[in-house]
Image 1: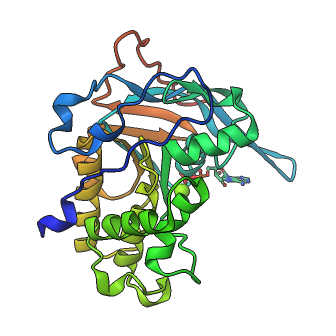
Image 2: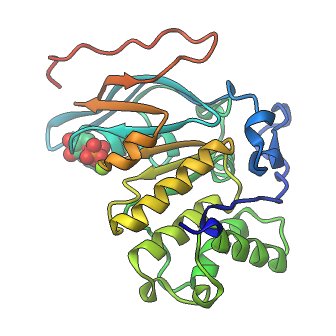
Length: 289
Ligand SMILES: Nc1ncnc2c1ncn2[C@@H]1O[C@H](COP(=O)(O)OP(=O)(O)O)[C@@H](O)[C@H]1O
Ligand SMILES: [Mg+2]
């Protein structure tokens, strides 16, 4: 494994907060220094769900995709979400990402109750706080690798074109995409390269939380291992990394393993509720949805 792939630094300053004037100050740039672990208060909760539920109604059928799920994850934690197909893993991740709205329950991201934000505030807030990596990459086919990574920064605004281009180049280098591929469109990249571009894009706005839905599902096993290592390192540097996976290598390397069944959490391995959090209540099996 080459070190370049894993060496991640970040000089980007956190942009001004836009969603509320009275938010607490963010640690910002310390996140990416190599000895970040000493500098960060690891008990800071970044993602907190309380009784989070999502019900779909489809042709008269009620599907309880996520059923009163509660947890609190902190900075520096690498969480694997496991469970059989259809148990609600993706739906839960979409709720955390704001790509879907919960039917009920509470969700705090980095201490902010996202329900209290207006649509526009929430959009900007999530764009800054969260990075999402999809199994099938979701890169924009008409843009080059570099332009795909530049896009979230362009949408956020506040950077010169030269600055965001330079940052995109740096991020691509850090995930192991060398210069010769920066101007390639996704169609010219392998699955592993596309996923690494997608990870660089997810990191563009320096998010506190990385969410990934089966990120190694469409890459070969060697590339998968490198991607797992990259996620691990992102967590060690202070991000909260939550990955939905069937991949044993991700599950074994994760700090916390959360297993789901029928929309509920059935097992939480190595989970310690942060100080001043209630112990987790796991739902008993056997209730039909
Ligand atoms: N948009 C939707 N409309 C209706 N049902 C949905 C929708 N999305 C997911 N579901 C249902 O919710 C359940 C959980 O799906 P999903 O979260 O995709 O599971 P997983 O990612 O664990 O495979 C499944 O029964 C699925 O069919
Ligand atoms: Mg899924």
